[in-house]
Image (tube, rainbow, N blue to C red; front, side, top):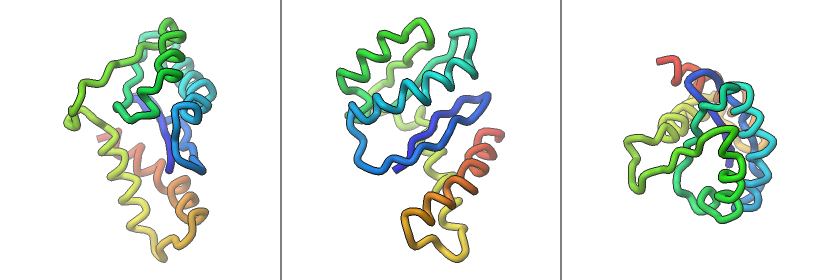
Length: 130
């Protein structure tokens, strides 16, 4: 599983998750990766963070952290069952395209991670330029 943050201005780091995402594990990503990304890309404090309603995203510990950092960036509350607004599907398509077009195909988790890091980010950047 991978995690990424992006905006119309820039792409953040692609983070490899070694295990199932829980609220606590998700909270370990946000301060180091989301907070620093938002501080750089939206230094004016006007950036809005959008995520889906996945269980780890909606956990109490994550909700509390987002409330504590409200002055740094805004959290866009996701309307339920709104896939047409979800850019995640475009990101997933771009990453899947990078993996499927790899020849020879990756056969190990490390090989898949290498493809995603090398080619996935380029595909993502191309997706958001259009």
